[in-house]
Length: 98
Length: 434
Image (cartoon, rainbow over all chains, first blue to last red; front, side, top):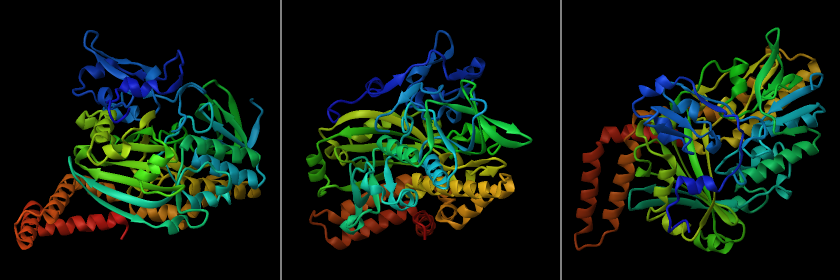
């Protein structure tokens, strides 16, 4: 029940229907830019948790298959370093309620 | 598809695009409506409150078969602190006395499917699962569009209604830059299932009557934004939206913010026992008037979110989109008669918007967000002061009323000061619309 259990992001994304494209519609343009980004707002601000910081590889990992296409990524990156485009026709999330 | 030529191609089957397509088809034009989702609505998110007037202008007597949820008879504003809240509201069944009601709640995806079907009935060619990512130009004029798969379609005029991240607006040169994060809000939302009778009892509603609650207060943790709780037939729409630059700076996760608000002492009992059945998120182009790009050029028009058509202080957007879409459609139908699709002829669209409520409302409220940003503490100071004052006022603890009242006044003056408050009142007046 929603009032008793705090939903995790995984719970939330698990409710959605996706048609996954093997081809990513999201690209980090220059990984070097992320190294100098202090607070990495893409990691926290993305409502689908698409972006995670990999401390070992020192880079942002992109889980494009989780994208719910809110459209924020392009502006969320302070360095305009995220190349986000809508997925190809028919791919991506399909809302039932919206 | 290279030799396919339409009178007009509309990109995006949302409120703006469908309104434009229907208007043109009814005027006898050969129209293609292209949607990137598998079905109209698949990618669309809204609160959602639908305003009747602007839809009625496109589909007269829409209420006869439109999938409506509840007719809104009550609107509320809750001003919350961490553990208390002031509730203000207005209820009048008059709003829904006869069809159509002033406004309705809708399930946006169901609405979009219905609306797109109306377009098909009017003769529009609806193509779904097609992502358009470029315009085709000839001698400086837009003459068609290109899909991600490389397919090309041609038309006299393209109407770009491709949403808040308008790729086409950029490709056509109407928008010469990316949006800044302070021109955009990010909203997250959940649909919460609850039996119909429970909703009616809990929200004091009869039959298909509905109510809305907007919430402001310190639950946004100082970020510029608000939350909402709307009643559908057997679901609630619960969401929160804040300025994207605030999310950038605060490192607050939007879905955590929503989850936190669920356990607020005023919210918790309203959603108790519900089951979340869908999570969604979308950006809202809150730059509005001050950010509006060029709306027309030779062979192309821009409408809806793509053109930042939002009235952020009045929860309006889809109604502006429907009105603008209709006017874009009318403009193209007139241009077709003249056989002239130059920027000069299409400028008529801008004129129509100027003469309508769309530009008037947007211009009236253009600086609200700027002003609130400059006086950010308004968002936290007043909710707290107002709640503390109310708490004092209702407290019966053996201290004379007179002393309570003096304590309230002293507290308010100490925290804000008279001149500062006068300034704030001016801003608030602008927010409401003078």
